[in-house]
Length: 156
Image (cartoon, rainbow, N blue to C red; front, side, top):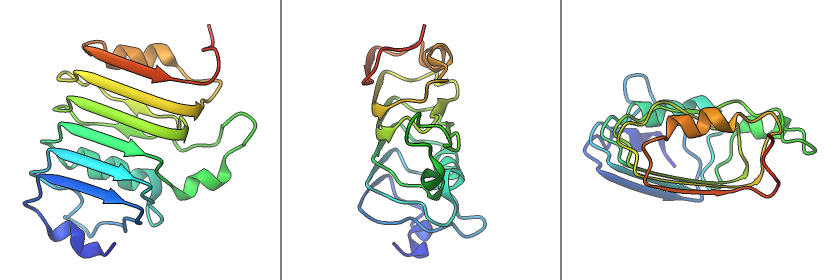
């Protein structure tokens, strides 16, 4: 993927599969008209988790966000035994209605208040043992449809 993607300021829908997203140039981080963002097998080699956070936060009209098997440089520092070592990723999207995350590890996903959320699907093959599920669920308290797929019993 070329950095020129960030000059497409009128995009309302973006679906990327199997590519790397470069760091955005200053002043062109997000897409002001984007309502749907689908990322499948996408990497963020230049700016990692922060690059995705900025992309989401700087797309103020975003209503649908699907993140499927993403790759970050920080992933290489993960302890395979307990999935610790991820850089925590915070999703800030006040107009978001539909959130879908599919990931080998839970990547420490954190969600800011989502007042418009209707549907959340989170599927992870491994989760961090210190995961605060209460905090996660509180952030999506208004959700109408919730699907969580985790391989182990959740900590009490």
